[in-house]
Length: 350
Image (cartoon, rainbow, N blue to C red; front, side, top):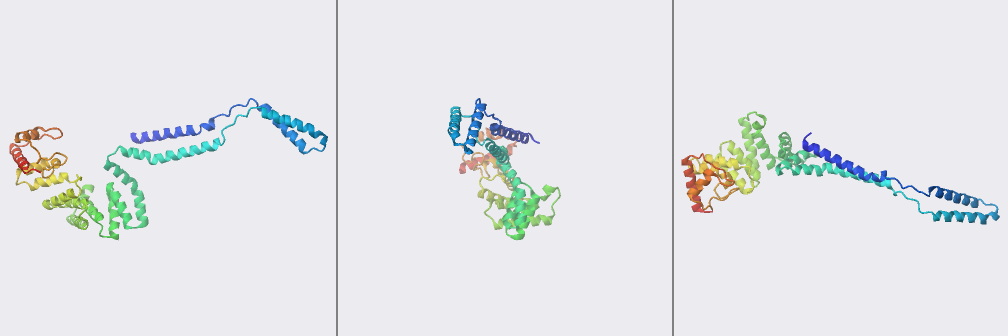
């Protein structure tokens, strides 16, 4: 058991013990002693005896005396202070509260504590955990209903949680029901294409072509979905179609400006495609991931809007500044080509 899990168990145990202590406190409370208990019992018995005699009276000459004595017993009871009373319904109330506390503790165990745990994770990690938790229910629902929608929901949860064997099964069944499902097509294709990385076995040329066909078909059916272009770009890059791959990945970035999944591959593709321009080659390899593919800015500022001199640019590049890392090992020719490129972009502007 991990430290976090142990802490959660201890927390729930403490909450449960506190609830039990508080709600059973009425059961433990004593009813205060009654100092007039004996006298109260004697007068009550006297009253009851006289009432019984009056009810069965056959000699009416005794009635006035019995009624006088019964009245005296009643006045004596009335003169006594009220008897201390225990809490009405205490056992029932305490047990009800105990049941409520148990219910709240159980609800907390399956809601609050899991949410508390998820709060410590990143957004992607939390989504993956939630997807894993949903898998058994989604799988059972899909197998029970046999509908395309249920299989797609199961496949999505399995894919998002990296449970790829279940994703293959779910998406395969969805395609049997409707072969024109873009998500199922492209995700099955990328799983087939990357199967070697998952299993350590090389993929055959035939399987690679089949995977590429699935991904291309999914992209054709849903060209406006960012994932279609992202997976298409990855697939094309694997087949050495760098120009087409770069076009697909740039389309992905247009459809999803916040998407960062293709940054490294875009940089690598630009470096391979720009071997004829040493400045672009160096920029693509070292700068594009932060400053954008065309220098217009990304996580780093726009280099086209920069007003730094050539000497100042060279100093920042070789020594770094703020979040900008240093590149002291650039060859003089590469640095010179990069500076020339950046000065050209400054003249062009945004």
